[in-house]
Length: 215
Image (cartoon, rainbow, N blue to C red; front, top):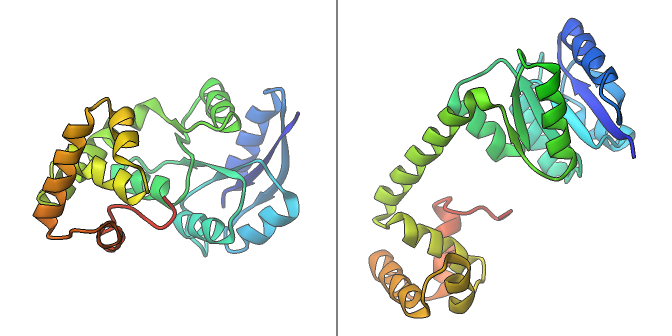
């Protein structure tokens, strides 16, 4: 089946260039274009694209705001950010706000097709040129989170699974640990946080943004 694409960029030349690249990729069709993201949820609802190619620097609405609006609207499309921004913090914010892939504008036709193919198959895509910087940023955030909550990386991982309703056996099987080891971690987590019930852990995890309500 043909994959329907919506291009959102405030530069007509960029849209024309992307459209030309896509024209040579079989199985894709550009069903619409927009130069701003202020009415993106409405446009997505009307055109029903499978993938939105979204710039972050738009005229009246930033790409990050547009992503948030799509998320709030419950849009089913996937979003590939196509941007010149290489700052790891910006990229992380885009991914956290709902982007399924991030591609630099100086990409090749081959990489664009790879990214579209990944999103089309339900996967994520990150431009190789920025992958290492994003991984480093994620690791730094993870370390900071561990230090802030006085938990190890493994304990944070187990905490997230606990508040998502996973049983001790499920956690042990999923992480390749023994049930006794998971029980020990669980006890240490509760002791360090001074919280001794799952409901309390859930509230703590949401309040401290260890998880979100969408997780």
